[in-house]
Image 1 (spheres, helix red, strand yellow):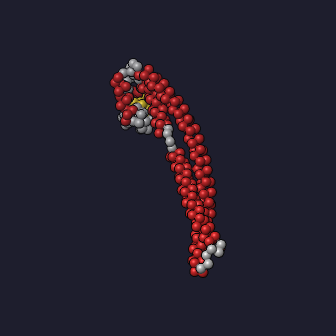
Image 2: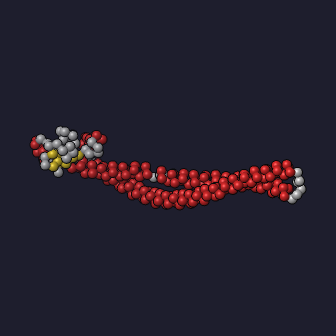
Image 3: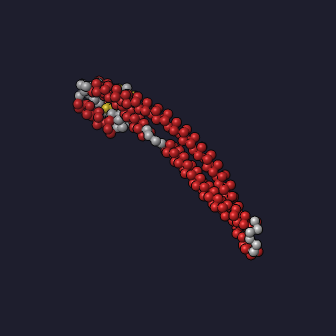
Length: 233
């Protein structure tokens, strides 16, 4: 005969298996790349893109300055070497030279501002690389820990499965079927202890005749309220 005590012992195994399964599901959900890691990679990518943008802007300014210098030098030479004597032509040349120099001055200011921005972007890139390195190190350590924990939980779950297989050998099919049915509807707890005349599954006081029947140990007794199989506390 399968007793309530047998089923209670089986329940203890099943509850531990449930716990390991829940732990394994949680671990599985945490294995892989995290939001923090993805965000750190995105931050590094953005910092690299900003630095590249500023480099392109610097090259553009440098090319424009070279173009202006190529125009300013011959114009200055022609203006001051005495080769041009016509007053109006000299006046026009001076105006052109002044305009080119104003443009050069403006580009010089832009270049200085870009240098400051470039230095700030370089510092931001260095910081982003450092942050990604820190996050990757922490992430890898966490992943290693999770996989070690997963291995232990899998081994424990397998051991409990084998223990369960041995435990149910020889159990009555009717009793085991009732147990499994109740486990599926009672959050995994098909068997409840009785303490001070009350079912510890639903905390309802039991009729005296049920408590007396339980003490005889003959057959399975169920709580009239929650229907759990009762076992003496």
